[in-house]
Amino acid sequence: MSELPTVTSLDDVRRLMAALPGPDQAAADEAAEHEAQLTKPAGSLGRLEALSAWTAAWQGGYPPRADNLLTCVFAGNHGVVAQGVSAFPPSVTEQMVANFQAGGAAINQICAVVGARLKVIPLALDEPTVDFTTGPAMDEAACVGAIAAGMAALEDDVDILCLGEMGIANTTSAAALACSLFGGEPASWIGAGTGIDEAGMERKRVAVEQAMALHGEALADPWEALRRVGGRELAGIAGAVLAARLKRTPVLLDGYVCSAAAAVLAADNESGLDHCQLAHLSVEPGHRRLADHLNKTPLLDLAMRLGEGTGAALAAGLLRAAVQTHNGMATFADAGVSGKSE
Image (tube, rainbow, N blue to C red; front, side, top):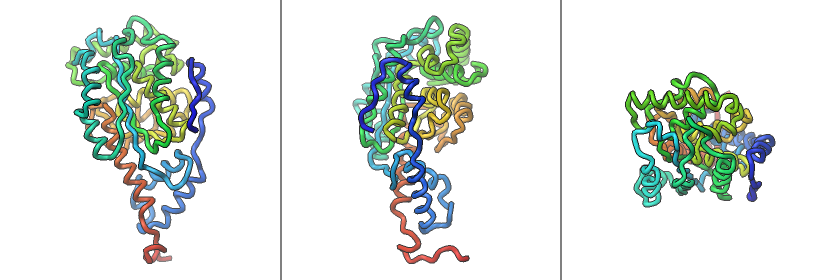
């Protein structure tokens, strides 16, 4: 599917979510059959074996592919920064976008190592969202526009999509969104983000608590929650995840913010993130809770909390290794190696 449907409202998005394509079971079965013939004890490559079959199933064909890797980093600014919830000023978002574009950030180096292309998508950086402690972060047009931008970012013929973000104060937005989707005390969803002190943590907790009280029952709808307490870059990520499902492109999700954005799809449709893997486990406390709610085991745990898609790009190298191992290993018959004794 190369031509994606146009979305002009959240109802358009909801209609797409109600009819998501599923995995290609024939491709998964073919991968499993081939895996059983490779020159190794059955199951000896552990999760790598499941990853190659998962890749084939969600690409909709066999053999799995991992040649064309794309990392998309969405950037946005947040009005809630006015509540003193970040250690950095909002100007850093635009400065870091320039750093990405100049090739000077961590994500540039990791993409170069794993062979992934990098696309940076700044979303109205000069128009921060509304402070969600005082009103909805975005009106519907702004939210849908960001979702559509995320959908448009995914090109045809991408084998694996890696997603990341940049946005000062967006861990507060992620915490508010995760709390909206899965409940619990606001304090259980917040963390230090870019390194805020204890007083800043308290301001972050209060901001999330105020958002829950202000928006109330409206947060029960996942897409309305995204509009009210999310941000443009979170909406862009949600749109990219949706586009990837429609285009049959497996997805690697970066840390807490990225996972919270994608969780909107899971809250809408229980199979909404089946084509996604959590790339790594962030040290943000809310990310572990989020992984548990999504019933997903992250591929890596490196005590990272940078964002930018760094964990997703690192995991792409792992996924590429899984696919290459599956496709390139000799079978027992090819290598003249005896199989397991009966």
